[in-house]
Image 1 (cartoon, rainbow, N blue to C red):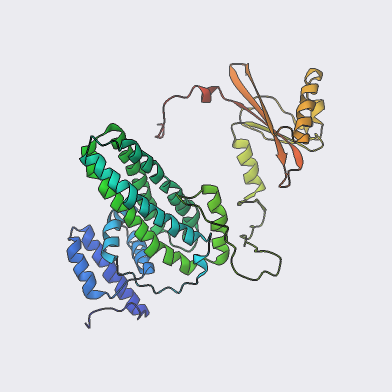
Image 2: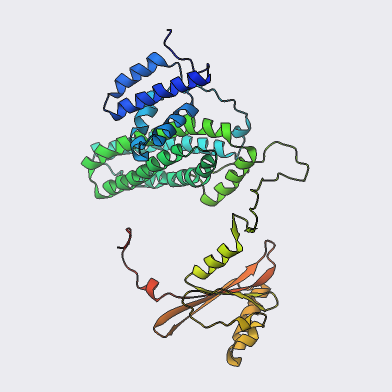
Length: 413
């Protein structure tokens, strides 16, 4: 068929032509043309479509004025249109199949999610809806609680993978996917509440479409997202992603082991690439700040912070907007014992002794004073090997916190 555009002929003019056709089809959906008609047009013009083209098309629509929400609303429909047509034009190494690699972890979690939906939730859901007398409610709720583990899967994608995508200029897919993820989260909570309330009519209306939507997201991750990021991310970036994933946690299944790429190191062990630190910035374990930014952040905290080093010398205190206890610059360089009245020195020394010996890591006191409920907490600060470095004192008025009730979810006027 002469009018079929082959995606393996990727000249600039052909790429532009494909993009215009793809974009036109999605705009037709936006204008109300039936998905079946658009599918027919897709089959007439395309032998396949790459994941990169789909995300580029989404990005172009947003760049031209379509809102993220509008693209998001069409996301499920156009994924259905392209399903089975994703052409694997990406060259993949086998590294992502290694145990513990973030891509393998994503795929293993998706496999577990599909099994949970098909083998556990759907049969129990059918029974719960169609046979009210069956004692299935608690077992179904247990499965829905397991399904909520999907929050960790989505959180790793949103908070670890998406920032790297944005670094490569791929900002549209994260925005669209994140919106759909949030809708799925909200629907899972709604489904659980309908089960608790035994509202079978409403449950039937929303549960089955929700399950299909979760499966659609699995499809989009495996056939669109993963091929695209495999094409772009470096091995060092995958190492960072694997490391950060431990912080968020895993969904239903955990990696069988830690991923170590098969490569030669000339400096002893795998070295992760760090971003260059801009001039005038202090590099931390995560991120960097200028000294001015750091000082302003510490002073903006609604707490009084004081640090003494391993020799009991006062080394720092912040200048919070409303200090609870007075601090003067003259205390810097003095021993903490000399900054307390004689009757409390014994308590201070006992606390420091416990911190230094490792008997304690923190201690708290609270008092009522001047209309405030004051919480004072001391933390032992240790290095990575557990060696005592000093003590941090944090003082705050928690009266307002103790009086909080209910919820506040919107901005105040």
